[in-house]
Length: 327
Ligand code: P6P
Image 1 (cartoon, rainbow, N blue to C red):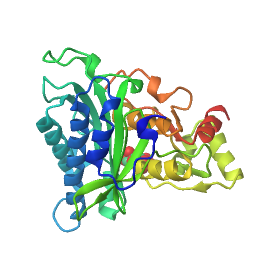
Image 2 (image 1 turned 60 degrees about the vertical axis):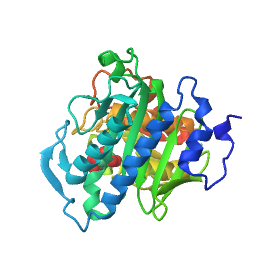
Image 3 (image 1 turned 60 degrees about the horizontal axis):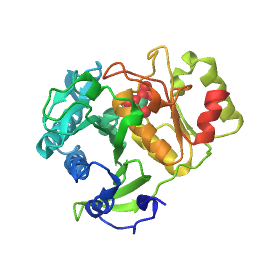
């Protein structure tokens, strides 16, 4: 059994856990571990600012749009600044792809890693106090260290990820990540300012009874999705759609379920972005025994053609995803 699959003692601190599992990475002499720590640090800062959202002027729209034309919330911009600063300071990242930036950011030419991030997914929910999340993917750079960043570095397919995870800013704040050796969840203890292992070796139930989809768009669902939603209703499954991807994904991973954001009239290629939403969650889904596709093809096999490319997204319990794919 892989070391990280052996349930490490609940309560071990994230730093110690990362160090205990460092020998999994053939090439990383601690660089990837440092990068994970940099992400954890930035998430603590964002968490602190999130918890004050009602009290200081960081709620509501920024009055600007992001790279994909969506209205930016003040905390979107704040979170992007915090993660960008932490990754630049950490020195391990050469290029950063973010929902909040049109092109990739050159961070450190000597960095060995590329990060794709949605700094604050679901941020329009902040003003109504609904959980939101950060989603991240980590790749090894392809080009030689010290040389200019290339498109080959930033447009890597999901199966090339060396790590991925999310932070869920919910009733408690959790960091859930994988380095390809299973999925582990850490809960933030504010009084100590540290993440502690609370969910060792997380597994997605093979089947489930929860389906998450915005049925407000059902008039433009294709036959495959229409048929699957009808199946869920016939089976009297539970409909749960928070409007915050990380929250829906996390619940379905714990309880079993499927999340679908299909092609719609408004978003003919789906709404979610391959590089900084779907690839990371697909890696986590597969690493915990679940499945992720675009309704037909495996997400992690999709060759990206642009930084902000959208794809239809079906993710969760393997039997539910397969039923949605095959009717
Ligand atoms: P809709 C938030 O904007 C998000 O990216 C996901 O977190 C969420 O699941 C989805 O979009 C909600 O989109 O179109 O159903 O409101």
